[in-house]
Image 1 (cartoon, rainbow, N blue to C red):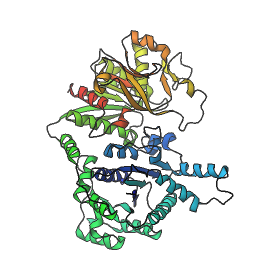
Image 2 (cartoon, rainbow, N blue to C red):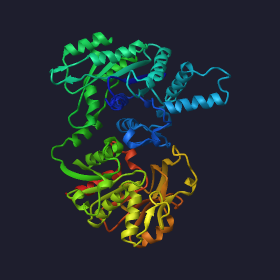
Image 3 (cartoon, rainbow, N blue to C red):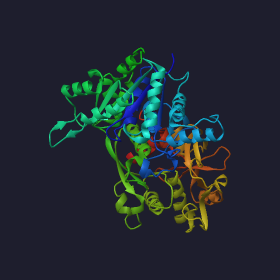
Image 4 (cartoon, one colour):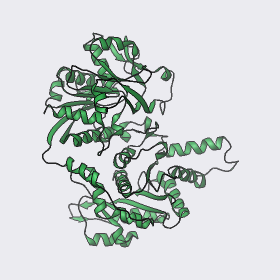
Length: 534
């Protein structure tokens, strides 16, 4: 069987949840026995989101092979359990860079390079990268909103590709909004009609219309959408806001037979759907007997929730594993001081300090870590969170008052966190960090070795700065255990405090490998430790 394609577009407004919808459909098709690959095409000019502010774009999701990507790839992996790679996310910047590089090398044999066919051909080539013998169905999400100028080359490319593949080999799914006008007490279909009209004007006719809405709409709305958008009434899908968790979305879509409709449109057999594992997870998530646990996340980009999307989801997965209801207290590290830290953290059962870049808010993170350490509150540090834990311990336990990171203070008297040798002299910011999966050897008898239940692991990284090995003997002498290190022993990957109920910090990002049906062991252990305090 050759690879079939699904193209997911969005209309009316942004942030409708195309990534969640695509991921949900991917899960349903996988659970019907099909091999799925997923991809996001982003219309912005950055080569990747690696240099973009979290306030602009949310978190940067890192793949196993070290590609800095859109956060929607996190949804893809969490829902389907299928690893993404460098071919799972392309941007306009990356597409144009490849075309221009080829033109400079004479690859177009003197031809005039144009958006059509050269840019659209490059986009189609990117789509083909997720085809193959290991793929039955490829799902490609087009970023942006129908009508955006920057999205036009992508829409033209998928129009061409749909035509090239022929009937029964590709389909368009359009996600749109049905707004409810409270003052009038009415739901309006006109914005969706206009959105589909934009697509139809360039030759794209959606076969499925997925309608985001605050409340259910009636048969008259369905019939009107079918009539004016050119889809069959049974192919107008209602996607209402879910009550408890985004992980309910696949089940809502399954109730409407979305996956069956997709398979029939693609001329594929409709195998049995097995959602037993997913249903069991949701049952644990919504168990009314779960006790409540509150964990503080002390970060630099708290005001935009998507900045720590994978962190929040991994904590939720840990809560599912521990049969607890999770409450997250989001705290801006820049606002935490020695004078207010007790008030800010009062009543929490755990403290998590995530990653970040730059000097802003670092002292607040250090302050929160000291409070957690001295008050025996379970603490989890990730990336910059581990670096801040090292600084805090060397300052307040080992007596190095000038301990700091050279990222924060380039001329620090005690540079306990510093650049890797291979990072010195690098001036480009994009794609130049330690990125992707690296091996780590765990120390026997540590919490980390106990929760992983093995001595050799692999986790994803995204950082430039490392623990300075010159301070390793001092920190160990004062009670810190090096719980994980690179296989050659040169790099410190994890630290623990054995005299503390649960104090673990890691240089890598375990949140990227957590799913609701398979919570990451560190998050599960951390939430369990926090629950033991409540």
